[in-house]
Amino acid sequence: MAEVTAATVKELRDRTGAGMMDCKKALAEAGGDMEAAVDWLRTKGLAAAAKKAGRQAAEGLVGVAVKGTKGAVVEVNSETDFVAKNDQFQSFVKSVSEIALDTGNDIDALASASHPEGGTVAEKLTSNIATIGEQQALRRAKTVEVAEGAVIPYVHNAAAPGLGKIGVLVALESAAPVEKLEALGKQLAMHIAAANPQALTADGLDADTIERERAIAAEKAAESGKPANIVEKMVDGAIAKFRKENALLSQLFVMDNKTPVQDVIASAAKEAGAPIVLKDYVRFQLGEGIEKKESDFAAEVAAAAGV
Image (tube, rainbow, N blue to C red; front, top):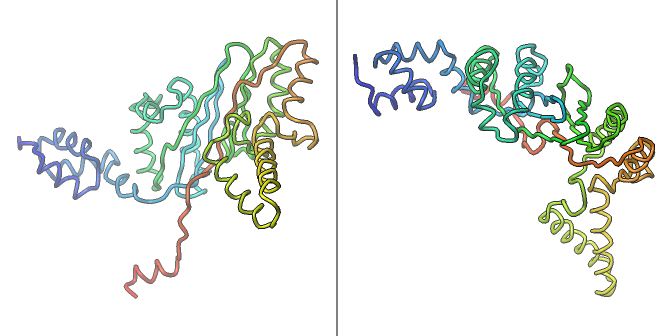
């Protein structure tokens, strides 16, 4: 049996592009035989998956799952929208959203959790990359929960039950009947999907974002040529408007475009005969924040041909 050394692990990694720990395991399984280790990695799909790791994955699916008074939403990316229609990929995203109910917001914990089809979620993902033929990635996960009440899921333009491009969870804490909460929650979730609030309340808005908006407002106001005290009031007014329009509870409800969301909730609570608190929400939109690479297909073909 050949010795497994750092040098042989490096050699195998250079040849296959697989991870260091995977290479070490492959050599151990192969008794130190390099060619057998290469075959072992290929059999497991690890070498093929590693070669795809550099590709950008900005498509895919958002999945939502609810169990009792807890909900989870996940984003799993792929290279192309075509893969999002693949039954194997859809099944994986669905299972991952259900597993996230137990692992919470920690993406590393989700990746290392057991998958119902065997192995870990990360290993199942690697297998999918090898069989589907595209880079895929677990991007993020978030859970919400209430002690009493309901968590209501919503998927905009669903590709399959619980799967789509925008996933929303609304956490309503209340002793009101569940059917009342579900009806309200569905409307609120549709509003969130459309209006994309940045925080639950104005106080929850990102401080850096507020400062950036203040700088923009100050520059615009200064161009008016008005006195400094008037400019200051113009900036304060612009920030107040921004805070109102980007905090969920103060946004105007998209169903009528005149009633603040907090008043919609208060009205529903009065009708249900019990207080209703919008404790939390989450909105995942596929690919948000990922800067997509623009490719020149003709240039790529010419480069490949050596032109």
